[in-house]
Image (cartoon, rainbow, N blue to C red):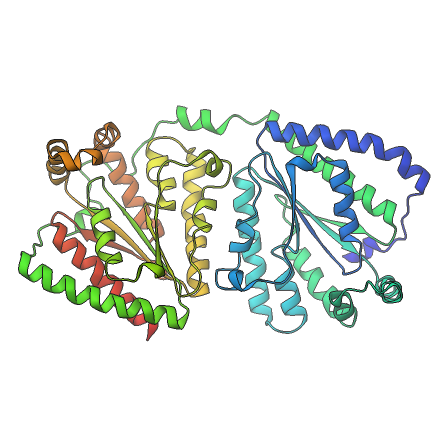
Length: 493
């Protein structure tokens, strides 16, 4: 594969000087057009050590408007990054819609280095590459343009660069180490490029021995990718218009049985029994939370449910059993402008806890397949592909060692109506009821079908849903605490 980048191609200084102005102008024009179209651009800079990748990036910064470009060096993991799932560090630097991110040390660097240095076996390597393909597909489906560059040098050329850098006193530790294993790195890298070269995010292999050819080729390929995306956009309908015009047809009818009808809503707890069990479980949870801190285990809880189902009350009983330094509660409301400028998972990735800590989401990423589906904020294509995107996301959390718990609090329509009326009548509860709550209630059947599909498609062996009957608040709170304590106890043993 890399033989195509060993042909000795060159561009003279004169030819480069003649061609650079037009390329510079065209790149700026394409950048501003993609900015107006709100297309995020992600440029991955990879390749052989010593190939001049830094010089290429400096040239791109000269050609592009740097106010819309951010470059991130993602080489060695920090302690903060190691305490979270692998992709967390990359999600943090994803560009907003219309922005450009240049990534040094992308999601390919660590898998290639680990396998080349024989820290991982073939199976682990190919699993990591598969995850990279999943991530790129997810980003492209959301509208991102991904441009992947691989800059290549022969072994002889790399050795010459190393000797020159050694003489100048500028040789990097990476170049010294990797030059000794050139053949192994080349073999491993070639496999990575071959297995992840997809139409939605193809690799561009560039001969890097000669500076002017290398830089001019990278600029032209970037321009071509940007112009191709602009041409495609001109032929594609607006997703927002598609979503608003689509008629939502529930997958189950109002009289058909769903998974929600399997939930027992009749259970009741008297006050005395409730108080005793609450005290016992909170005491147990307090010990388990500190044990998780000692063992460095992250915990993520997701609370979803009907309006007025008691999510807030259940969360308060969980947090009352823990030291406030060990958890954060993230209340998910309508996305901000900053959040709308990114993939919908971006705002949830940001809050994944570090080792030994806990994040509790009061509503979550499941909004994509619930409210965004029913209210037509997302196109059918967007929410339908979200099921697999969510499953992949949760699998990454669990593979990292995160203890993941997902609760749906279920109440009957009659109980919801009674709670709505109480909120209207009791002054201290009036802030809890809005016109939106009443409007959502009118779409009960559509939400019921959406919840059924959510559970059917996203209750996995590694991240199952726990459906809680919440007509009686006391029963629901104890069941939540029982589930949390049982899961933590099992994981920490």
